[in-house]
Amino acid sequence: RQIPIAFDPASFHLIQGYGPFRLMEEVGKVDFLLLNENEAQTLLPGKSPCELLRWANVVILKRGGEGATVFGLEKEISAPGVPTHVLDTTGAGDAFDACFLVNYLHGESAQNSLERANALGAYVVARLGAQPDWEQTTFS
Image (cartoon, rainbow, N blue to C red):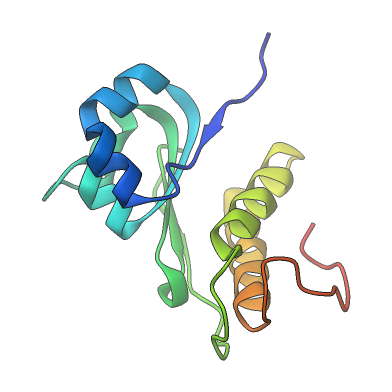
C-alpha cells in the first residue's frame, strides 16, 4: 500500500524484556527505525548503528543534547543538538519522531528534518509535561 512504517521501541527495558532479536524479527523490517543510543546498544550491543539497517531502510539515532544522525540514505547525515535548559524529558522523543517524519515525508531534506526535530525536542524538554503550550509553530 506504500504506507511508510516507523517504529520507535521507546524503551531499552522493553527490548531487554522481550529480547532484541525476537522483538525486531516479530516487528519485521520497517521504513524508519527511530531510537536513542541506549536502545540501539540494547538491540545490537557493541555494534555500529549502521548494522540496524538490517531491520530498517532508514535508522534515526537520537542522541539528546548531542543531536541526531540518520543512517541509510545516500550518506550519513547529522544535525547538532539545540542548547536548552532541560526541565522534563517526557515526550521529547515522541515529539522528535513526529517532527522528523512529518517534515521528511512531506519532502523536506533529511538535514532540515533533523534540525527541526532537534529544535522541537529542545522546546519540549524545556517545559514541564509531555504536551507544553505552543508559543509558535515553526517545526513543520
